[in-house]
Length: 528
Image (cartoon, rainbow, N blue to C red; front, side, top):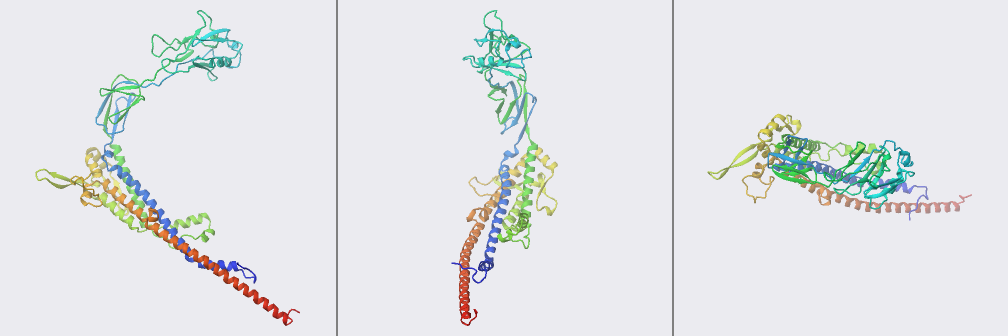
């Protein structure tokens, strides 16, 4: 039971002030935890950037990145081509091109007499007469007193007619569309009897048939400038003869020998597609590597060179309560500076990255006469136009001599490929060591292999250091701080209870003393 204020003394305020002083060590613990949490976030950001270069190196370890081809068509209006795999042929002759055709329904549109402005008026206003007409062999009675809309409803609800009738307010036209597709799809409009008058001629609807597609025995007889019609059509595959072999496809694209041929128009003449090395794509790939590498070097160098800002510790909850959000954000940005300053993991990675891109790639050449291998330098990145930047302030970044690199790609692509993607040549296949453990494998491996394995190892180290949750070094430190905070809070709870008991006892003693004083005063007449 807490008693407060019998003597006019503010016990709660006094206890709060005492506890604030006592909690100072807890603030320090929370600040330590916040720093470790920020450090984990900083490592995670580093890990993401390392992963970007590592993934790029994963691709560039394989020679496929340097076997990029492009295709050129002698008649792009007929065929275009795109390399999708690894072509084995340098040219392709394409003949007999037929485009794929989708299945289609027959339809016919009558433009009418141009005055079908209101389909709700009686058809007699537009020249319709009484009578009947055969539509797809089914007799439809025409009542000129009724509207065009009424006729459309009648047609569309007639069982077995096999088509739909519609009106376009935009064109003032009438369209019949078959309900089926393919060669069997057909629309016929006939007189009700030989020599009978067409009661719908005033609406521009004429007799005839869409016929069967490309069938001379069943031609399209709707041949009139006021009529637009299409015949029913079956689905047909695209065809093309490529280097003497006939290929078919449901679409207008055919893939053959790692090349996708897009058919653009029907053509009986020969179109030639030739393959050539896509030197621009290879150059762009190497440039992307240099840009990504330099970006990582910049970022890591900035982090290890960054110094901690003095006087900017993580804010306590009490400090935050007295600040605006913008002030908190600005303060914490300063407090996060230098979290990875002089970090040994990052410093070590930068050193190894620089070594990996500067060391020459060695080829072990077999001397058949002596059955021995002798080292032969393939080259360095600088030998193909990818050298170190000029200033030491660039911290080992790379720069491209475009003229030199493009010449190397055009004239000695094997060398370019080997410098990036070469594998060891004289070690047994059972050797499972990597470039981190074997100097021989390091020397004989391309830059991509070296960098990939260095970056991959660094990502594992970052995991061990901070990113593997509570099992990481930083994670264990945070867990230990949490334990110390819990223990401290328990002690603070006991201390707060003790303070209140002490002040309660003081209040009771003061109350008792006041009572005794009052009694004594009353005994000596102090109350008169």
